[in-house]
Amino acid sequence: MLRIHCPYCGVRDHEEFSYFGDATKHYPGLEAEHHDGWVDAVYMRNNPKGVHHEFWQHTMACRRWLVVKRHTVTHDILAVMPASERPVQKPEHKLEQRPAP
Figure 1: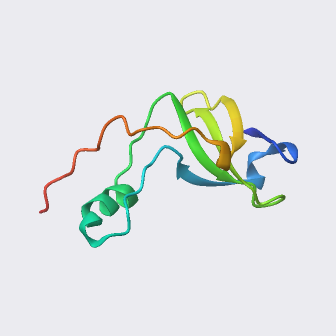
Figure 2: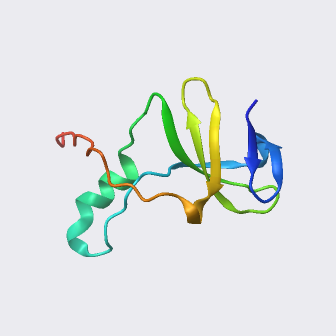
């Protein structure tokens, strides 16, 4: 069982939270020429092994959005911060796009 320290409500069981994915993902602009960028952002996912930043929402209490820094192998939670305070990172690498069948 994961125990997440909500900065607003204190330590709570992970069942009070909903996982919403990669907090390091960058989304392109809304212009039409960014179609491939949106396909990449929405459908292509890395499966990192090690420390990763994830979006979680405290759905059963304060409903605040959080960024949880978690080790994906050991499930240790290393840090929790409000989503509005997350560090903005440049993408390290782009996922390889698979050729269309």
